[in-house]
Image (cartoon, rainbow, N blue to C red; front, side, top):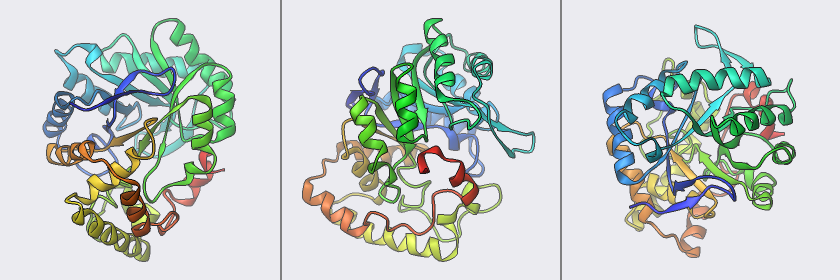
Amino acid sequence: MIARTTLGKTGPNVSRIGLGCMGMSALYGPADRTEAIATIHASLEAGINLLDTGDFYAMGHNELLIAEALKGRKREDAVISVKFGAQRDPAGNWLGYDARPQAVKTALAYTLQRLGTDYIDIYRPARLDPNVPIEETVGAIADMVKAGYVRHIGLSEVGAATIRKAASVHPISDLQIEYSLISRGIEDAILPTCRELGIGVTAYGVLSRGLISGHWQKQQASGSDFRAHSPRFQGENEEKNLALVERLRAVAEAKGLTVAQTAIAWVSAQGEDIVPLVGARRRDRLAEALGSTDVTLTAADLAEIESAVPKGAAAGSRYAPAQMASLDSER
């Protein structure tokens, strides 16, 4: 069974690895609903209890999928983390963020209905709304905590100053943010701030959206797949990043591991307060990711991995320029 940890000082007890469910509904091309539900079931049976979603993942589809997968199971078997606030039109275009107190409470009402539950374990704004002080957003979620609809408050993709402001209003369980061998920006100011305040980190993108999974093929992304437009998957950037993967593969295979297992284990090794979220959409990818939980990396192993993939070695930013400019965590 997978080890457990407390998410931050005040958060829930969660598995040392979580399941990011976004790709089961949107952004990474076609997904198989039956296989997705089977993957969620396999995750729960393996001891993963943290399921991460967003109300804007295929406009509620992902929440409905999770509700279907959890049908007939004890509610307490799953710790459900939900992001809200992203605004989209019927064509799927992004329109910004709305984290006004009334929007917070309305979004939560819809989420509770779609998930078929009385409460959400961790509720968090997907991004900082530039028009609403974080204190107001967190205050509104705190109202929902008092009312029993939310158990814990989380944050996503915000910087150190915003984290401090949010924590002054209500205890924060965790910060969800991208963190991987090739996305290490949080190490400078954000991670130290979280540790100072006793806030955990749920790390998404631990395989950089599949780029450093060891399975990615050149120019694989197409159509509506987010990666078809992501800087790290473009032209020379993709070639340079895949060259890093081959260096990592040599290290991994020498240890009897896959590239993905090595990359996930590296994130886990950065601290007990960091919980990797793996975006497995299929049971075989889930099984591979679960293999990382049996891996213990020594200081020498970590040095070898970081020598193969040095900090700052990635080519291209993790989002397109306009999105990067809107990220509070990148300021």
